Length: 453
Image 1 (tube, rainbow, N blue to C red):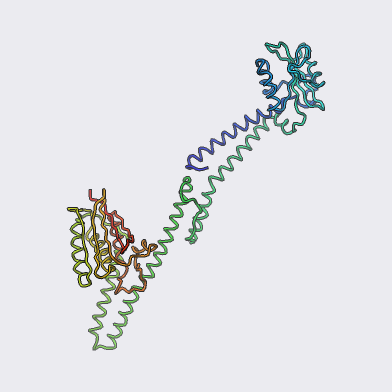
Image 2: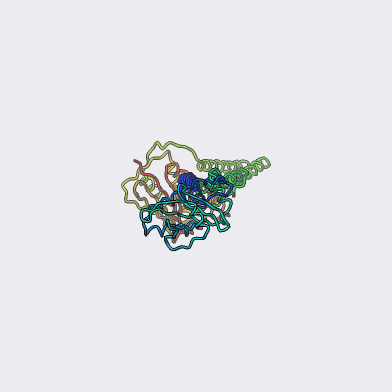
């Protein structure tokens, strides 16, 4: 069963109701039909047979009111569907359709005379029930119903006892409710078990669920898997960040201690060592400042900035810096202005970091192409370099803290690996998005920012 949980619950209650009603009606009809004949002889020793069952009354009514053509069909249907043989005897004792009734059937029919309207018998041949009827075409008739003696005792018992049929309906509805309840709660049980494992520290816990479709429980399971994956990635990222920060801080601190020790041992060279200490302190301050810039924080977008003017200025500076290596920076834009909400110099840092990253990785005597376009309610900034690109499985990682494609690069050649992380944080704070993709000759960094309304 597929569909939304509401539909499942609605269907479940509906099926239970249908099961109760259907089991009651079907069992009533079935057992009334299967127990049409007389009960055991000890149940009517007084000589007065009990009244006929409801199904028997219905059958007698149909026999009395059927046309000549329908009468034979009714007799055939009763034999085929219910296993009941019906003999219709006229006043002379002749069977209307040429059947040859057994002697017991004829004997029971003879008992129906005068004021006696019905008679019953239970013999080795089976059970017989005779009723006086009147047909408009044939006049007074005696209908003899012959039942199979092989009827099971449990069927006869259920046919005679309505409370047992009620019990059967309750059992059927209980079985349906149990199966539906299990179907609805299996997913919740799996979710509870997975939540406990996740709380115990098993971050690889996942729930087996189809990729798409299903009901709310499937959506909940997919959300749980997404949450568990995000939690695992964040914890691993925090561990990597702690390790990277420790590594980056350890080197300048070690150099600080060495410079301090040399200054103490060689007073004559203390000036040079103090300069060394100053440089390392500045590097520490720069690293801490960049690291703080990658952390989330709420800032008000209380100023406005023109992206056209900003990018034109940054591209001019980058083009000047790349000149000695033959690296050029070209800016393309057909917009007169592109005003967006901002805060302080966040966007300036973000665009500058992306542009400098492209300038650092583009090849000598190549150009970095910067384009600014508008699509709907968003501005798109594309920065394209002519460098080696990034492995496809690493594209989402380049915006992480301390990420370097070449882990062996030092901070002197590759920086701290925080530039794109700072750019991502700034763009997200402006309500935009940033992504990377490889092209034939390098890497594209694409920034999307909302248009100021």
